Image 1 (cartoon, rainbow, N blue to C red):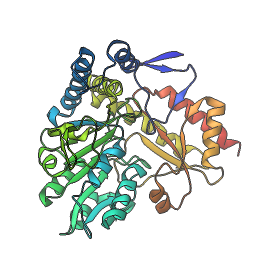
Image 2: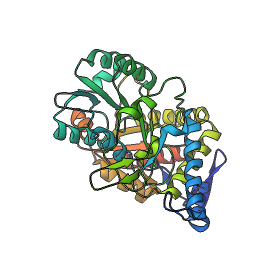
Image 3: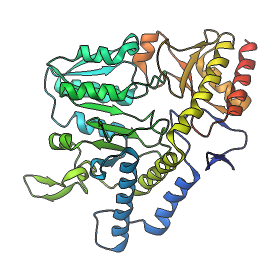
Image 4: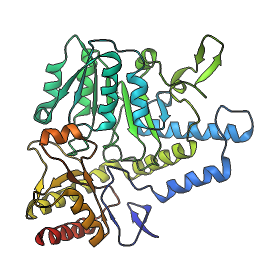
Length: 396
């Protein structure tokens, strides 16, 4: 195994590998892997499970990680909690009993299964109505959302960056609209975190959720949420047990106060520490530097894909994009392109419906090839990818 140094961070990379699937799961910095390993070799205790030093030190590590994440987003550490996945966080909120029959929720057909499936589950439980935004709405999304809000609208659930096309949304303006209308905004930042700066000091969505292993470059099986003080007063979790329970009798239970009530079971302290280390490392590099680097890579990708014969770049004019691109060919199946890229160039891309079936339905396509970059990708990576892809398409 060889190393690649990027912006001062070391990553494990096989010598010839070109990894262009960060929107599925990002590569972890070597330092984060070491933090996780050190936890098990030096600590290894569980929080809220005793007074011995291993338990105390585990709890200290958790709170250090919570403080690190809070500082990065300019929020109070009492507003940050950790869960196994963003889906768990969404289900915990959506099924907590704050919605009822005929309530309406604004969502987007461009968002992926991790967002839409929990909302669809809510519809089967409480018979709520879903008001779907589509691709055409993205051109003036803020105005469309404002027009869609009615007396029945009880929440907006959206991502900052869509998985299928990498469309970047103006989360600040959307948050302001939700606050003015006094309805909760649930914002998924999984695909955008690590690629752009989020500062929630002046304006904060009611609930922010993020997977730990995508843009944040943490380990799989980790996630976090940020919940405002006002929302904590309204939102009691449906998932309870373990460290969230302060006391219990035959008829009821009492939950921990504050943010800890959202952390049931045995937390993955090692993974949380690794996630916090990754986010801290990205923050120290500077999100503006990362954004600038990825804009340059995207420009190369867009130019090269447009020049490659028999390929169609999936794009919509007038939108702001992040480091996720998708394309397709009418001549060759998307899965075949991905397989050949791996066989010929040790190049890893994603192919298929991209966990975005409503988006694919809107495009009237069955599958796409997706390329997603992060700070560890280089211009040479993109050049080799485009050369290899052009060679494949020239043979068809």
